[in-house]
Structure formats: C-alpha cells, structure tokens
Length: 316
Ligand SMILES: [Mn+2]
Image (cartoon, rainbow, N blue to C red; front, side, top):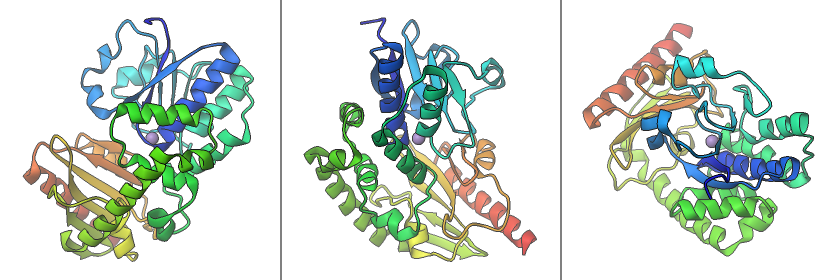
C-alpha cells in the first residue's frame, strides 16, 4: 500500500525502540497506522532519491527533507549544509544532539506536541536506550557481561540474521515489556549465540594490539577471522583513555575510535569531528570512518592514534 507511512530506523537498540515508540505514538495520537523497516549507511549513497514517491519517517538516522516525521540525536545527522538549512524544529521533526539516545526525545516530543502519554514500558526502554547508546554502563563488566533484559536484547541484536528478524523484534517492542522480549525463544537463542561470539572475541583481542602508548591503544583486527567485541580494548586495558583500530566490514575496512567510558580522557577531543575529516562521523566520544582499502585504513588509524596521543601529551 503506497500511502502507508513507513518508519525507517537505524538498526540498533535505541533505533529499534525509537521505531516502536513512534509507531505506537502515531497510532494512538494521530490515527496513523505505520509500518517499519530498517535502514543502513549504504542507503546514504543516493540520499536525495531515498524512497521517492513514498510516505516515510526516519528515526535515529540522517535528516531527510521529505521525511514526514524525523527524530535524531546524532550530531553528524546532516549530510550537507543545504540539508542542515532545510531543518527547523516543528511538530513532526526534532533533533536534539544533547539526548544520549533517540527514544527519550521522541517520547518528550509526542507528549508535548501530540498529547501522547507513555507507559512504564516505554519509559523503561528509553532509560536503557540511554545506557546502551551512550555506553553509560556502570562498569566494563556490565558492558561486556550485563545480564539485564535490555542488555540481553542489545547483545542479541549483534547477530540479527536479516531485516525481517529486526522488523519482527520492533513489532514485539510495540507490545512486550523488556523482560518478556528478552525471554522470547528467538531473542534468547540469538543472545546465546552472541554471547559465544563475545567470549571468542575477548580471547582473540590481545594479539591484535599493535601499540599501547600515552593512554592510546592502537589495534589491527582487520583479519576476517577475528570476532569483534566493542569493549574488548577497555576490558583488557582498563587504564587506556582511547582505543583506535581497524576492523573488517562487508565491503572493506572500518576505522573505529572510542574513548574509554570508564577512564575518560582529561582532554576535550571530538572524535566524530576528527572522523568527518576522513569521510566518517560519530559522536564526541566515539566515531568511525571507512577508508578505501586496508593500507589506507591502517594509515588513518595510526594518524588518529597519533593525534590523540598528541592531545593527551599537550595536556600532561
Ligand atoms: Mn542508534
């Protein structure tokens, strides 16, 4: 049905909660019977023509001027100056880069503009979205081995087999509590598989370290046989301030950079802005870029590590 609104969501925990929240808020406050579908970074390549002729919303992803509804919290959401100029907050669009995750700003907007009152279920999901998306785990132990329902679900998402599965989870999010959702057989199975991957990743990380100096860890995990655990650098090296490394993607290589959430650097460095200079993006505390090949990725990662060491040394 061409005139049915489709909510396109970023494929991660807070993006999926955002889709569920918006779907329910639109249904109950505006009588809008929306569907939903995941979205990924590849779809930016022809952004002006995205879903041409269709009705759509976007949550937790780049601004699009044809989006009927749009909500995001990423500082790098605007793909050009023209797009930035096309945005003004209104009754259907809201950008708040100070929000740790996307669902709380949708809930706030829906209450203020559409009179939508949330239940404790969505409040709980929004609370955990902030923790997961902004890496506000109480310690690295919780980040890596956390067993709370939201953390089990977030981990399960790391092995999501396909878009249909993700769309199914969003549907469950529109009606389940986090506890009910985490107990679903499909989610629990994925969690078990993802936990095995995590254990393997933690074992595989130490030999990938190329250097550890002045609070910055540089690693090369570009081999496709190495599994990835986002917090492995901080799990093995709790004393570092930054980790920067190379990891494989389906098409090539990704440079990933992040500050240690449990040992924050004593300097003001915006990683997302550094990454923009390499064609990437991100937040202040974490970002990434996709150089054209492995040598370029290694060079980029090494350069960024050097920049970060410089910033830390100037401070020391
Ligand atoms: Mn997200």
